[in-house]
Image (cartoon, one colour):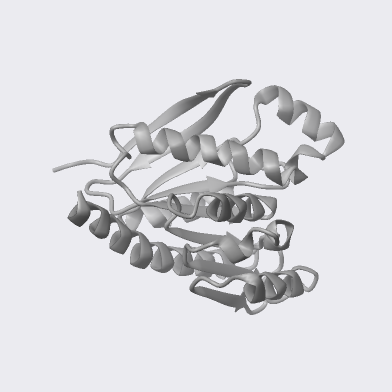
Length: 227
């Protein structure tokens, strides 16, 4: 019986390497790359929880550190790189290109799961490279920071916001109106920005798993049919 494979990866680029954690369930129907924000990384317990739920749904996941170790040290003091959406989107592009050329993931459709400013990076990449991204989910995201790219996004996009995250709700409503692709805005009642309330993160994971399972499996099948 095939087993789920887990391994750490280093994705090289000009300034160093992006560190990631790749999980491959048997017969995966798609790959979801995680774009963290606000000083977080691949060890985020919230995104690790969501990734585990996606793995149980048959989806491969790639948890990433979008900043190098030196950049993380700088950002811990200045907190400015986490808001450099162009930089984060470019790092996500590097990871997406790596996934397309790596044997285990090359045939899988690609989804992006973005949290906070990572959601803006995910949507900017989806707008810049619409043929390469098949679905996007934003958790408590700042999609408004990629507002100029949103009309170019063709990937089905799910925006998830906490019902008590009062500052972020209107920003997601603005992004929803700017998107022309298939999209949905879900407000989780009683949840704050980090979805730390009982049952809130479980609801995020359930919604994300359903969205990716539906859109990535369809994209993977279409890709295989045309190969």
